[in-house]
View 1: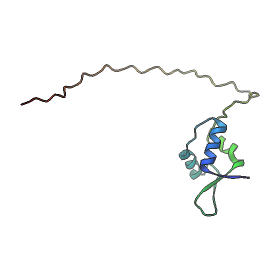
View 2: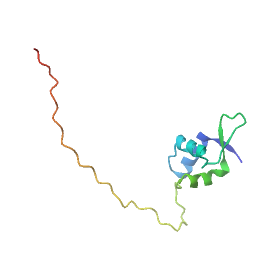
View 3: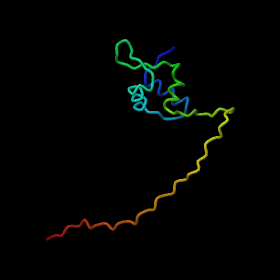
View 4: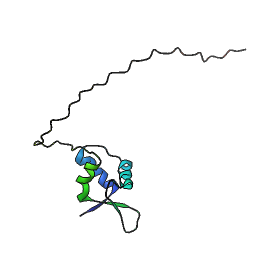
Length: 101
């Protein structure tokens, strides 16, 4: 039952699940009570139990970096392609020259 600080836990989750969860997102999940954590003896740091990582990953909707070969779900397909926005015509530039009057 190793305990890690927030930054180490975020780094571990991002490496295991291939998603970029930010420190701020993780911290807010702790403050909201969605992620189990406790303070250290000094009260300065939040500590996360390493054994809670699978529960935390489900809570934060992290997706495994490598899908399980025995998974019954097909891989997600990108069905919606974004169309490129129509470009606006260039506006004529106003003259920056001042009169000598």
